[in-house]
Length: 387
Image 1 (cartoon, one colour):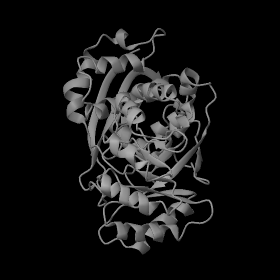
Image 2 (cartoon, helix red, strand yellow):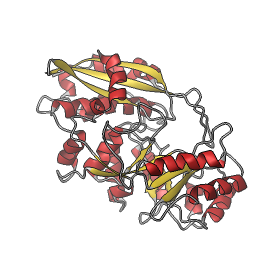
Image 3 (cartoon, one colour):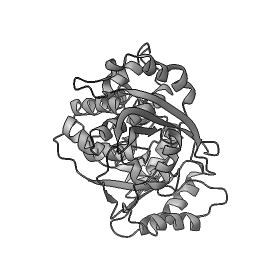
Image 4 (cartoon, one colour):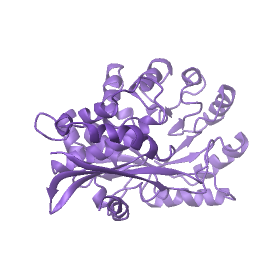
């Protein structure tokens, strides 16, 4: 068994939206196809991957460093003892001759390729990835029901509170009971007015998250914390710079309710520093590490092991990104759920066709691999790269 070819291309996911830090008018991602010599139904088995929104495509890094290391490696060096592609050996080959620390954008490049490798491996075994993960790293019993929340509430040009409420109603009407909106891109008073407008349409059992995208310094983070304490929010997300662990630790003194962060930490080591020094509380706070941005599932497994060593349950992890890879990890390894973008960043977000949300829960379909073939608009884009 061997990898015949790896293809990549940069694709646009531009949108006129903005959060507190960036706009998405020129946003891109990398799409990868790993073509193997395994034939199923007359076609080579192909694994697909892409990186999450917010970090742009990584084609140059892939072409200059990581893909050549794989194509130059002896094919047998990338296989496990059974002669099957080994994601851990492939990861180690990509990371060869890389210094530790300074994780930056290389974690996104490797994470994208890693996703495609896992998709291929699960397809070769003719299993959903969540089943394969449960058998290899869990108790062999995946939980096919996964919590999801609807992320949106971005700042749009000319968007008023009525339009914000209409957007959130559309998510509630599609079965979500937890929705998320952006804050920090306007004044505190304006954001509180926007929050009040969304809360006014929520019914019993429906909850709101707010996300500052790392915008605040300590004073602003505390000011928002004090103001947000009047609400029963599902969480207050990423108030300060993701590497400012002291800010996060200080904030717990001003905000007793759940907080969330971690989507911009791209290694096990950075995640460990958050747990060691960020004051996060294992009984209420949420961790949002995204495997597609943080070296992939191989590294995510290390992160989950680290969390267990520090007394954290995988159920406190609700990854950023809204992609099917994290859905499979959640179902196979017992994470607390996954982000969802019902309308944005399509066709890369969302679920396979026919999957419905009920009270913010979806049921994973029995599709080999990550399940991309079950999402018609997405697999069309993927096959255009591999065929």
